[in-house]
Length: 393
Image 1 (cartoon, one colour):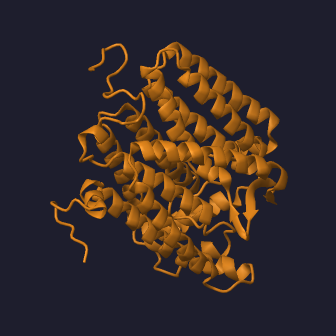
Image 2: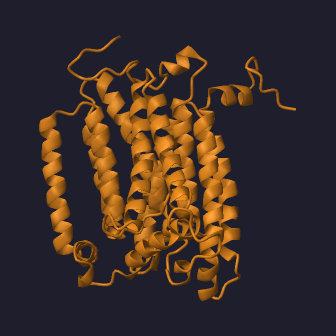
């Protein structure tokens, strides 16, 4: 029997008493909620595709088990292990993205998936969190190594990743990746002049996307003027929330899942609103908010600059993805094929998010070994103090 008393110095004991157990509980609740939502939303989709009624439910459970294993195993790593794992993983992800360009599976006009030994994966889902950690290390190293071009190297990697994302195309994921990168270099103390220049460049890029990419222009036009194109899914999702009210129509009593093609993926939140009501939707939103705020609270207690930048970037991506999906469901922003973390159906998304959550939990652990807490990440500063206000050695 495992001894989990505070005096336990085993690997499991050290992990249990240093991990953020409240965040771990919230993540477990999200994963469990996701399975319940797939159980509610997917049977009509399976019927339309002539599949077994619980086809997507069984697959989601089969995805959730290894995803939980990934989350737990990654959360055991220390900051050095996270940095090394992310560096190797990001290189592999870039290689898979390159292969996807020539041998990827095309679905609905997008080439984002790769079939490897019968398993279909989306490499870009894994590239995002790994890129955040690599960027954090480069920025941290720049702070202590005079002349090291951390920002320039991270910008080069960003351009490589964006090139792959825009080729697929996946404009929404490209925007999130740029936003998280900007947030990280802002926290790293990049002068506001350069941030302004990058902001102007980003605005020009958005304008160019509107002009050059018809599907981007179509989505923005339909958001501004629903009558300008097909806005069936968004209007149906909005109606689902109205029908659900405060307490919902009851499990299995919803009707929008019978007509929404993406009821189990992009619009699973609308199914939750119709069948379980606004209170359950607020509970789901509360879980996301709790994980993000709790994560920032833990990250701000660290004395490790790399840990702060990496944790903040991972939390921003996690929160932004949830906010975008919920905003689309509520017709608060243009449609974007982005899953709701741990709730929507999808193996690559679930596993990649488990990887993100595992790294976040690992980085925000209370380190028992003072030397480990002070970094042991090569060349990372030992304390974060805003540039211009001095540093404590």
